[in-house]
Length: 245
Ligand SMILES: NC(=O)c1ccc[n+]([C@@H]2O[C@H](COP(=O)([O-])OP(=O)(O)OC[C@H]3O[C@@H](n4cnc5c(N)ncnc54)[C@H](O)[C@@H]3O)[C@@H](O)[C@H]2O)c1
Image (tube, rainbow, N blue to C red):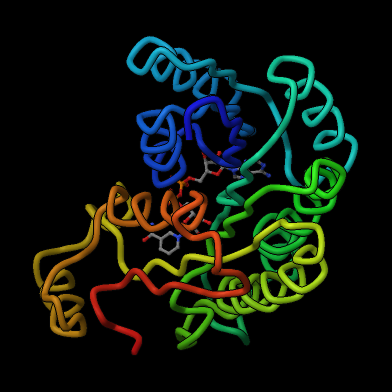
């Protein structure tokens, strides 16, 4: 990874921040693209200080083409190239189908699915020209299994898995690999809010018997982004303690 340049969308906190941390530890320079610009800059400064890599935090909205194009130019200006793209930015706006508001459907699809296409398009162009690169998209096991109350989210994540396969086929002739990681239940501030009873019920669904951590997801992402995965493209790895087999 040393000397490679990686973009992590939504890397200002949570799973994205953990991914940026593992890639920086392996020696990659990091550009964090996030709507939370102050947090993105702080996270980047922390990585540069801790791992001695180049790191930048940019204010980017992955749903807006002009914002993503400007970020590509700025990142190329600072780092000279982009070798790795981690499409991690994502949100939930849960609700049952018959009660779901149209704006909640649209917003989740815009960030979770259109955002992945937009970044893959803008960064993909750079990678195709360089004839190398690796893209890892963050999906979710609910894109495979479905989940009551998450119609918009599960549809967006199933879409990410399909988009991963299509981009893998389109980009493979130029040496660019595209894979996905589908996390299960990961310990984040969101799942920390669950009651003990809710957490116990979740645990019972997981063969390995515990929730995952952001680091569990980040390690799988780092593998797929690295040359160790050079013969792997178009695949989705479920990082879920065995919930999906
Ligand atoms: N937490 C889980 O249990 C879990 C499980 C499966 C999949 N995931 C997926 O992992 C990814 C990260 O989730 P997380 O739990 O760390 O969430 P999080 O909310 O902590 O982090 C998401 C990040 O994306 C950023 N973001 C949101 N909209 C954006 C936009 N339009 N442009 C740029 N950045 C934007 C946010 O500012 C935030 O920093 C998401 O794609 C999520 O769907 C999470």
